[in-house]
Structure formats: structure tokens, C-alpha cells
Length: 273
Length: 273
Image 1 (cartoon, rainbow over the protein chains, first blue to last red):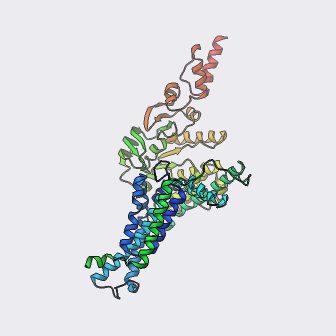
Image 2 (image 1 turned 30 degrees about the vertical axis):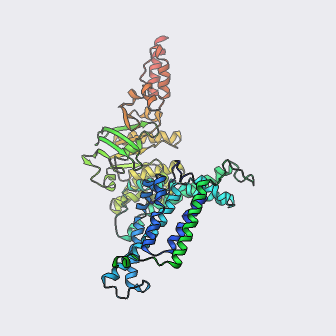
Image 3 (image 1 turned 180 degrees about the vertical axis):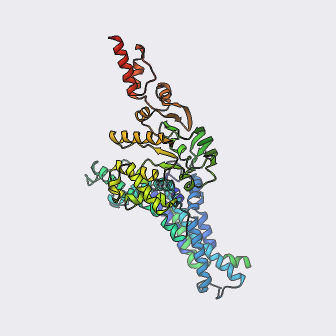
């Protein structure tokens, strides 16, 4: 469940926390697009470094690290698939011919697999920074002011808001079943997947039950009674927000320019120089 | 026997929940753990079956450190009934629900059959044998959860808030039931806020406050000490409150049992007339 830790918002105030969520989201989207544009190790390494200042300024490094650690298993999986498939179907990689046998070819393959894993890590990392520094309320407000219908905004904020609740509940359920002798790490792969049934069923049943209760309590507080809602807080762009917009746009332009016209050298070519 | 030695526990979030607990629970003892919300009661008892491992210090179950054995092993001797039955019920029928733990422990088919029937009878849910646990009422679900633990006849039984959400009649039954278990030389540990319930059972009580044991002793000593109780955010039982207020008339101040109280008052009245 630790992968959810990275998405748990804690109310603190910092330059990063106070940024407009729309701007922050735009920034994360730019990172996302850039990560998808490049398959090159060095470019992705640079992309990995970009959100780091935000992590440290917002002082969310511990939670951020925890979410990365939570994603480690998936990252290893991505690395392995890339490596194995690259090994058997290497034609998609430049400079390699089947079969992969020289040291050079192995290094190219390795670099490519690491780059793909890094791409995933960049995505997890930047989204984690976004969620760690943006309160669900702000997020909902941002959606609303972007003229998304209120029902959707509400559904979205509620979903985000309930992630940590669900994570906590999953932990309790796991404890309860362990106390009845359930061993999650026992048996072969098939058995291990089946071991999660006693955890998933109560989790889902409780989630449905809770959503029904939530619906009832909302209706009893006149949800949807008035068509035009007013907000206590309004989002307004400040100077720092404009700065981040400019940075994001510049980053995007640079990235597209590099992608089109500048061949980024691969680590292998750099090293062989 | 449960031995807790210098137990400190901090959650991964850094929250220090237990700060130096020393405690011994002998075989066949009946212990109530009381204290305000967040005092560390549940955290403490989760150490008894190894769900949580000490940050420092030690917890020994029958002389074996909980660090050295799995929860599944410990669960065989220490049964833990969670507060909310919805955190554990998942099977298609009550019968299967109760058999779940027995299968995990590797009991034989015939033994499972016998134990399930025994547990169903014990908690008065035999008629629901083939019913889905999700169709039952709150009180019944709680009893099924309890049955699913008692089915393997553990020597130590931990109950987390057993009286919550039970009507008076069920509570009475539960009390009889717990006392009966205790009479059969089972060790019973109850985590509760329910003073009246504790007053009627008159077990050994430990009061907890901010991760420490405030006091340890018989219920009639602790529940009649308003100063102590105030620190743990508990009010004395109602009968004790009356007797404390009437202390000027020479009434004893250590009464927690209604029947004892009646006797004292009757003697007093007879003496006067």
C-alpha cells in the first residue's frame, strides 16, 4: 500500500503548496509529454531531475521517496520486460542486430531498458509531487473554475480524498485476516493471487457501503438543491504561477525543438568517444 | 503468558504510540485495557499476536518473542477479534467464514466440521450456517466474527471494543460469554471504553494515557478513583458516582457492582428502621 503514501496530501504551506493547482497540473502535464517524447536515457535523466527542486522546497522528500519505493516493484517489472523483449526482438533498437552477443549490444540494450524504467519513474515522481502538494479541495476548485460540471468535480475530489482512507482500511483488513492465519506470501504465484481474495472482498464491499452512506448523507444536506453554486475561495493566478507557466512553456518548446532537430547522444556513444 | 518488556513502538509516520510499556498477563487472567482515544490501546494489543513488532523492547508469548514467529503461528495461540466485523467477513456462507481460519491452520476436514458446528452453536448463529454473512445484521455479523476466532479454541482471546453497536441483551450475553471463557482458564484481553461493562465483569484493569500505562490494578480500585479516571478521560460507573457523592453519609466509595450496592443500601435502611 506504500505506493499510495506518495499521494497522501498533508496540509502544509510552502511556495510549491501555494501554487495554483491548474498551473501545477500544466507543469506536470508538460513533464508527462516530455517523458513520452523521449526514449533517450540522458534526456529522461534530465527530466527526472526537473521536479526534484519542487520536492525539496515543499519538504515532501520523505513521502516522495516512499511513493517511489512503492513503485519499485512495477519499475523492476518494466525493466525486465524491456530487457527480455529487447533481447529477443532487438531490431527496434539502433545499432543492434540479432543475436545480441557483443558487449556493445548488451550495453545499448541495458541503456534502453533503464531509460524505459526511468520514464515510468519520472511519471510517478512528477504526479506524486503534484498530489503531495495539492489539497483535494484546491483540486476540485481548479476543476470547477475550468468549467467542469460540479458533479464531476465532486466525484473526482471524493475519489482522491478516499484513497488514503481505502489504503488504511486495506491495512486493517490485512491485519484482521492475518490474525486468522492468512499468509499472503505462501504458495505459488496462482495461490498468492488467490490469497488476496479475503482482502479484496471486504475492501470492495465496504467501499460500496460507504459510497451509499455518503450519498445519503449528501442528499440529507441538500446536495444539488441549487443550480448555481458559490465558492468561499476563488483561485487567482499570482506572480509565482505566471513564472511557472512561462517555465513550463519554455520547457515544452525546448523539448520539442530538441526532439525535432537535436539528436541527443546516447550514453554508449558518449562513452565510446 | 504474555510478557511485555520495555515496549516502545513508533508508526512508520513517526508517531510514537507506545512509550515504555511493561506488563505481564498470566494464563487465565482477565484484563481490560482502557483509556482515552489515541492512548495506544489497540496498538498495544496488536503486539500480542505479532501484527505489530516492537520498535524496541520485547513482547513474549509463552516465552517466545513475537519478533521470531509469524502472525499466522502466533494466531494459533492468540485469537484477535477485530472491532469491525466488516473488516474480515468475505465468504459466501457463515460456515465457510468460520472454517477459513481452520483451513489456514491446516486442521483436518472432520475436525473443521466439528469445530464449526461447535462455534456456531456457541454464538447462537447455527441457523445462519448457510446464509451469506453480508445478509446478517450488525450484531449477528459481530457474533460470526467472534465465532470465526473462537472456532480454533485459542488460549488467549483479544477483543477490540466488543460491546460497540450491541444492544443491551447482546451485551449481557457477551458478558456472560466472556466470563465463561475466562472461567475455562482462557486468557481474555478486552480493549474497551465501556465502563459499565468493565464494572460488571470486574477484571484487572490497566489505564493507558499517551502511550504509557497510567495504572494497573483491580477494576474496583481503579474505577472508583475519579482523579485517575479523569486523566484517562473516563467517568466512573454510575453506581460509583452515586456512592462517591453520598460518601458524606458514610457509604463505601469503592463500589462498582449494582448488586453489592443494593446490599449495602438495604443493610443501611434496615439498620435505620
